[in-house]
Structure formats: structure tokens, C-alpha cells
Length: 595
Image 1: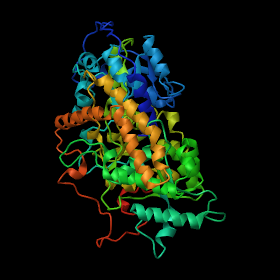
Image 2: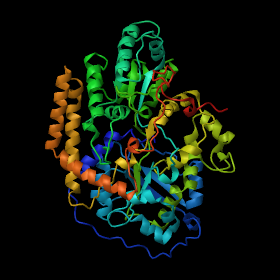
Image 3: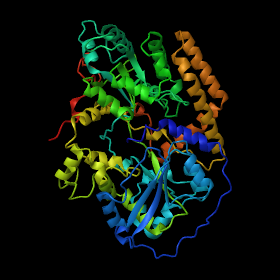
Image 4: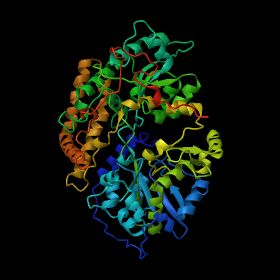
């Protein structure tokens, strides 16, 4: 969860780096399987591990670090259960060069974890650098093949029918029912004291609509810019996330609040960028910019600069992924500035459909054909992928760090040892929540206890929880493009060019000096993307979308197209704006302190 949107721009960059390189001739199966007896399938495979061994594991994320691996208590328990001592390495930056050098030199370590959307996943499998995991499992970890969920298998299976990777942060339908809700990815947050001041004004407008929120920004700016208690010398009405070479994630989040659908009324995929709701959102941002409510510096700011604005409480409204700015929101909170979630709609008041955190996986893990002890490593991955392995790596050793709180095993209960470590921020000392690359958060989130959470942690975790009634899975809208298709490489090239055009021209759309100029710039940008092959890409993607729906037996991908869709209550029964502290949300989704 934490990784997911921290590297949104890197995901696209990795695709761009690898898609432009033509695939070399297949290396073939140059590493014969060892002649080792098959493992029985009558119990979990790791119970048959027969030796201790080291595993060299590369994680292609610059910020991944597990310095105590092999030495902390969780690692020792992992070694007892599987025999493995894991030695992790990671790159110094996220350029992808270290992984490319490993591939080019044919020097991959035993295990490799890379981003799920990276074209390197296809490259490593097609060119024979990694083992098909299902084949290894047939011989030495038969329980793993039974454990991989059907929808996860269907998504990651290659054209040859084999499974070459296991995902982390994947949300299988096995763990999700129609009543399950997860947090959003991005969130619209407002500074609470300024918000409360505005809604108390006798002529306050409906702040859940764009016109009302704009009015609130303008009047808050006039009231609270300056010196003195509760005022700031530099005011920001709307704070957007950083602009990159491929666009801006805030426009994605806001388009979902505005209700831009990715599917038309007939169930066909459509580009949200051409919907009326998306265009309305862009026009609103342009209006905010022209009225001085989005600062020019925001269009060139990096993450540290954006975080500074939040830390200082200078922004009335933020549209970012809060998990990327944890310390910024917490610093503001420590200084008496509290941000709270806000539900925004389009001007017509249509129900937002906000993307939740669920997906098919952020990272995938593969076993290299250079690996030693592959019969043991596949058992190790079987354990890590299992619910038992997830519990160990998240919470530590059962009976020592935690116990079940109930007979149904619906939630864990921490021991005094765990609570003391949590209080002293020493959980990593024991290896808890360190090996995160294969975590199953759809399973872990519901059973995780918030016992002992510090006040500021509760505050932060509540930044998005009240948005949950409006959150829905977008998994169906991300079909896996067939890498065996003859046009696959060309299509990825087209996507790279399209994204580059959008990233180049989006700031110009927002900062245009008139509404007419903004519309004209938007039209010119779409035309530039069309020249890059956009229509061809959309045709390919739309076909994949339809095939994915058929494969998953889904009639409607867009939640509001489903006749059974029930919209959350947004306003009072008489249609008037609700002045609740958190508009259009309810207390049941808040976390409360547990002593």
C-alpha cells in the first residue's frame, strides 16, 4: 500500500525505458532442472524443507531497505520454518540501470522483485531468464499452485500458459465481497479550521460543488492571508501533486471526484480524458489558476516543495496521495493544523466514483534461472505468499508478538512486547512489516489491529477512511495487454509517446490566460496525442478491456452502469448541503484510539 503511488511516475518511466528496446532472440531453457525428488502435496511445502541456505534477493526499488534481514526475530523464525537466510540488495536510484546491467550481463541473483507493470516482466519471461513458477511448484511446492487465487493467476499468466511471477499488494476477489471497502489512493483534503470558518458564514455556498469550493478558497484567502494567529503569509487555495513527464496524478484523482467514467453506457471502454466530466475538471483548474488560487510555483514544484506547503499549513485544499506526504501532514498536525477529507462532486452533483487502493499487484517476484536451491526457494515463496507467511512478516511471531483476538481468527491482538515496540517505534528491530514485497493487504488489512496506535498515526490513517463509501475497485479497467500480440511492442511505444505529449502540454492547459485558450490548448494536446497513435492504442486497449470483462464474467466495469448500484447519501434529504464536519461521510469509517 505504501509503495503503490509513491512510484506512480517511475512505473511509466520503467515502461518507457524497456519498451523501446527490441526483444533479443530467446535464450531457451539453458538451465536444466535439478534431479531432485518431487515434494508431496499432503501438507504445506515448506514443512518439507531439508536444509539451511542463503538467498540473494534483488528488489528494484531505491528506497527498499531491510538492514536486519537474517538477524531479527522475524528473520530467525522465517529461517526456522523455511531454512532461508535472505540477503537483500536494491539500487541507488530508480533509473532502472542496475537491473538492465544484470540482465545484459546475465547476472541476475536468485530472486528478483520488480514493478508489476514494467515491461521487464515480459522480457525476463519470454527470453528465458526466469523459471515458470507453476512448473517449479508442480515438483517442489504443490501447495503453492493450489494457493494462487484464480483471478491472480488469470491476470499474470503468460501467453504460454505459465506463471512466471507472484505479486505483492494484489487484491484478489477471494478476499473482497460486495460490502468490503478500502481506502482511496488519492484524497481531497481541506484545512479544518478554515473550512469550519467558511461553513459558519451566513452566505456560505455548497462546498461539495466546484463553484462552492472555489468561493470558499477565495474567501478563505482574503480572511487568512497575512500575519497573526491562524494566518499564513503565502496562501495556496488548491495544492496539486507534482507535474511529471507524463502528467499529474491530481488530475486523475479529481476526475474521479467529478465522476468521469471509463466505460460508456453500452459497456465499452472509453478514454476518461474525453468525457464531459473530465473537461469540466480541467476547466475548473484553469479557473482556479487564473484567479490566483493555484500558485504558478505549484506547476514546477517537486515533492519536497509540495510537502513543505502542507507542513506549513499554507494550503486550504490538497489533492495528493497523502501516503506520499506522511511527515508533512503529521508535522502540520503537530503544529495545530489539521486536514480533513472532503467529498467533492461535479457541478451537477453526480456521485463520485473514486478509485480505491485495490489492484492486481504493484510488485512481482520471480526466480532467476541462475538461482541455486530452486527446490527450496519455491518453498520459501510458497510460505511468504501464504496467509501464515503474511502474518509472520507483518506482525512477527505468533505467541510472542501477537495472538488471535477471537476463535474465528478475524483480528489479531498484540502482546505487551509488540505494543512496547510500537510505542517506541522499534517494530523494525523485530522485523515486523519489513519484508513487504509480497504482502497480501486484502487479507492483512481486515485482521490488523490498531491497538496502541499513536495519536498522530490515528490522525493520519483517518485522512482518507471517511472517503471509503465513495471508493470502488478500478481493477477491471486495467486489462493485461497481451505481450504475445504482434503489435504489443509498437503499442507500448505509442503509449509512451502519448504520455509524453500529455505531460508536456498539461501545464499549459491549466495556466492558459482564458477559458477559451485552455479549451484550445486541450484540443491541440489531444490532436498531438492522436498524431502519436492514440486512436490505435485506444482500439487495442478497448479490445483488451472487453476481453478482460468476458474473462472475469463482468457485465459492467463502471460501477454506476450497474443497475444494482446504490449511491451513498451525499446531501440532506431535502437536497441541501450538509454542514457536517466531514461533508457526506459518516463516523463508522473512522478509526478510534484503542487502549
